[in-house]
Each structure stands twice: as structure tokens, then as C-alpha cells.
Length: 75
Image (tube, rainbow, N blue to C red; front, side, top):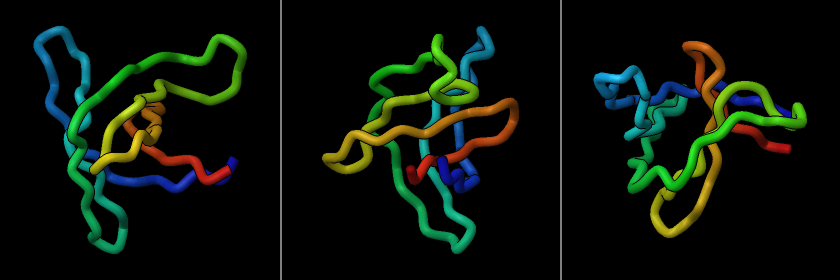
């Protein structure tokens, strides 16, 4: 797994849940997240943290939250 850490702008709900809204790469490129489809943790150790299934444009992608950090995986 090749992790690339990114900045993610989120909406934080009253119950503490983070809803990602935008991904920002180190070089300044930004992608709006149209929708969060699902979020889960790995039961079998396939990934660390919380995996969010998101829609960017017309594509379904994954981003991951590990504590206060966010990353994408380029396996």
C-alpha cells in the first residue's frame, strides 16, 4: 500500500462524525466530494483507520482517516 497523505476539509456533525467535503493535494489541486456513500473500519486488517467511499465527479473512490490524518491509497 502506497499512502499519500492529503488535506481534507470536513463538516463535523454534533455527534463528532466527520463528513469529508473536499480533498486538497500538497500541490494545491482540489476535488469536491459530491457524496459520501459509505464509511467503515476493516474487520480483517485490510486497511487502517476509517475508509470512506466517496463520489468525485462520476467516479467512486476511497479516502482513509487515521486519527487526525487523511490519506489515499495507490496500491
